[in-house]
Length: 610
Image (cartoon, rainbow, N blue to C red):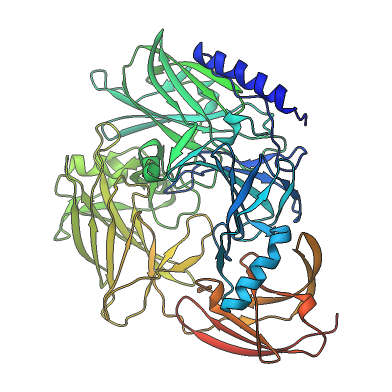
């Protein structure tokens, strides 16, 4: 990593400005590396995080904590926060340039740790916010990397311009190690409710399949990922996506800035797919395309690496291979391209599917005889049978509700397998082109738990999804399923006594779970952590629970020999962390726990020998 003196940096910035005025896009020469050494990216700016974009970049610290992070410019520490979740220990550093540099998941704030401890013991609160206002010079030791909040050890770096906007660090001269070109993993084309998917092997030959409606406009999505290095891990997002029809630019998206207020735009730009754990995102090309024309797609990452493909739409492509449309999915209904789909490949495995109306009268005996054995949209079924409201299959029922064109609010109440389910979706967005959007819900049976799947994930709305599950039998609260973690989380705010209701800004899979088991503790042991910028001894105590974790750091209260003690909670790997210098062998700890379901437990622990 090369570091430039201020004069060199100014010359570089002038050159970049002149090139910008000439219409040439070029990132500034790197003038800042957080660690003053190379570190590869594990996440990029603008990466897909469900209902929001990733607002910064993530650097790997090779599974190590305590990497020194240096001040990017003269400035002062505006704020530090301590929490076991989200950003964890986070520092907000206001530079003289006016930018606010955010350093998240820290292990230690260095010399500022003493101020944090003073605040914690003064307020008897584990979670605290301080506004130190302490000045630093460019290149000073500022803070230390860690793994607080969530995830493995890494640094999340974010640059804010004002209160609502964030900018890509890579575009303003921050070192962003990325040695590989972006990759295109496939394309999908739809005309109304017919969907065709093309593999990268066929695309490399310049062919993209489309359903074949000559007079109907086609809409396109392309699956893209960018890796920073070999081995290819942690696929990232891209900076620019451009589509050309000859010399005409029919679509162009460049993402160098983000607004917190517009994060929900992600639903109109990145289409949700059940195979979300696999590499890449499906980017919607918001332009109506025509068959017979030749197109060129260009993709650029955040360090200027590019890849391009030329293609034409054809009825079929030689060498086109199936692309996975789902990953972890129990039921035959799933979400792909932000629409509800039915897996008719199960016809070849003995599954049978019939269509019913709202009285459950049969409208179509056997879908396997009239549709190809692949994933089909539910819109293609409701398009053939306008009164279709259920799909019956070997494992149960799938309930459907077509959304009418220009409908902005949907109220849908059904009873499914004795469960009364009420849904209200507000501020619906328009569809991707001209397809029919269909809501769907089904009950899924598993060995350990029965739950309800709701589709399509990634539905376009900027309001709320209000959902109630009324089991008639008990008042177990509603839990939602994390798509990638496959863990259950309780809704912190729910209403009703025998009917549980929740509000959220995206469709989730839900279950009623009655959990009365409070968290317990594992065996304490001595370990290491960074305090005041140095690796020091700490006592670690594992916490054990199945469903309900802790709402915040103050859900854990520790006293040592009757005196309150600051407690850090490491959410991965779910351990209580206590400062070793304040403990000695034989000290008596009393630990009180309260989980998110308000189950409480108390434990007495004797500090073991070091």
